[in-house]
Length: 179
Image 1 (spheres, rainbow, N blue to C red):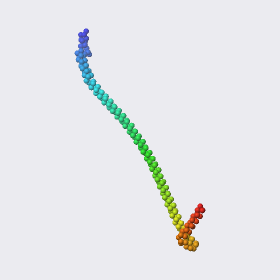
Image 2: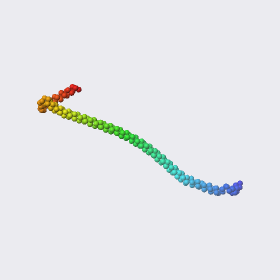
Image 3: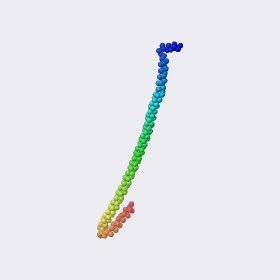
Image 4: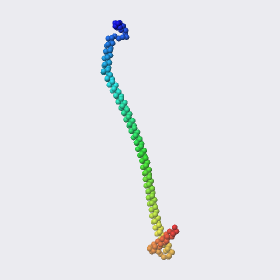
């Protein structure tokens, strides 16, 4: 029976020869050992390195993205602060402008009041001077008139002054009584 199976196996082209099977199995085990002991660790090491590099790159990209997001948030915050500061400065400038306008207006009004007071004082001084000149002129004219009426000369200065003063006092008292 074994002979018949061997004879039948020799005649079947699909079945390999047993010696070839033994050599093929040994070669297969040798390649399997070589691949398992030498190549698989190297391949795994290379794959792990690539995985670590890829994961490191991904981590670096995530870190960079997080940093970029943080910087963007910081820039937005700084921009908001700058806008707020600019708004505050504009408001301060408006307030200072209004204050300066008020101060200038107040100074101008004070200057106008001072000029008006100076003008009033000048007018009063001019009025007093005109009144004194008018009084002297009235005195001279009245003494001339009195001298013509009386017929005697009122050249005496002291007498002339007394007469003029008395006349002006009477004139002032009569004008005060009319009021």
